[in-house]
Length: 80
Image (cartoon, rainbow, N blue to C red; front, side, top):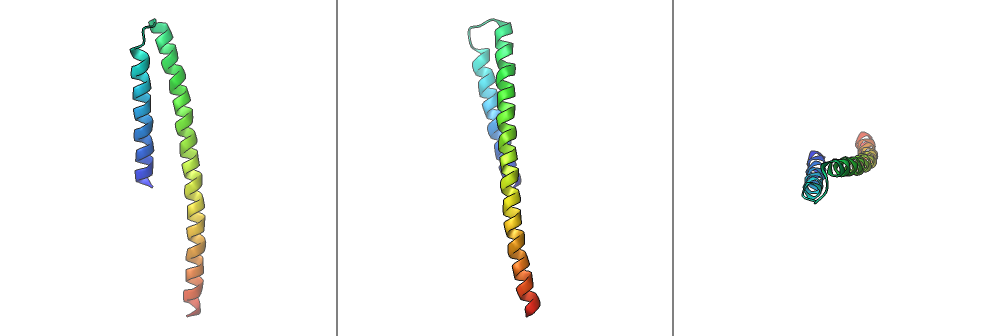
């Protein structure tokens, strides 16, 4: 679980740095560049947040499945 979160954070940070560098090297005025950085940053933050939410939901589903399986095993062991 921690590795997945670290991977998502690394990918998000890489995308953010790449986007920021691309905008910074664009031949536009500073105001327009800052405006684009803020806009892309907000978009990226939303995408990362959505990915994290989806990951949490998937982990909850896996947890529920594993809990049910564990309960079945415990029930069988109790009968022995």
